[in-house]
Picture 1 (cartoon, helix red, strand yellow):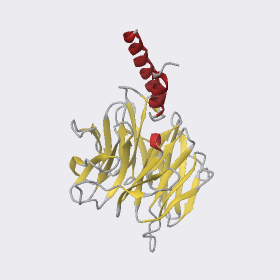
Picture 2: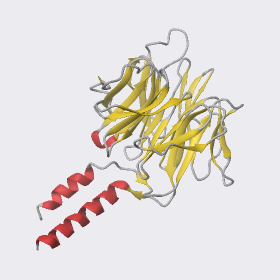
Picture 3: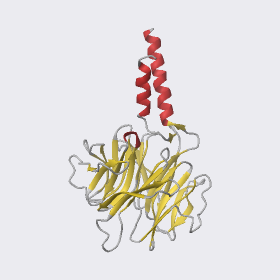
Length: 317
């Protein structure tokens, strides 16, 4: 075997699994929790918000494996539901994947489609709930629910760094944390140069550039980023009104986020800020998905690396 082949294969395995459109269009989904009833929407064919689902209080959205997953918080507790992206039907009231009684208040949800798992945060709301927050995990069909971490303050969003086997979460009270995907080895992520981590809302991971992005309502609302270890932190956008969810579009080099009344995006370095959807009442959860014409990023990386190795071999010979 040529000496460069094992190296290329090893490098390809470091790339995250999942599907992405390279330079393609992105579909955007969000929840508006100020409408009655609360609604999950997307951009319709006329370019205006189109309601596809309703719920009590959908505070988390994720898309993967052809399904939309969402968390729903109500007076009786929290549930997780799913429906097909291509044909989003309002589910039967009893057709939920996960259900937990009050004071549960499920928030951000993240998917490991290849691993068949979903993760979510539960800050738990109500009297006596403070300090009893959890990070939980289940199979994509809702079976096999386990508590990965307990005794947390107010965990909000969860983001996965699958190539490194890590998960990150934003805690409104205590800051940013990291752990293994099974919940072991929990450690804080000290953010360099930051003294205003007082109202974190959501977090996203760019595993290729090894960055984390998060929204912070402390002081002037901000979108921020840092290296995975918390170094090189920087304010990307400031002066935001109630920033909530954040998502990274690796294919097109964009970061999306929700504020009280609209969805915005910018380049990954914060430049080129622009509105995506305006005129919303209180946009909260957010998910983005490529068009159906997608390819597997890991496969694309492998093909590119092998092609590079082939060219190098030709040059040497």
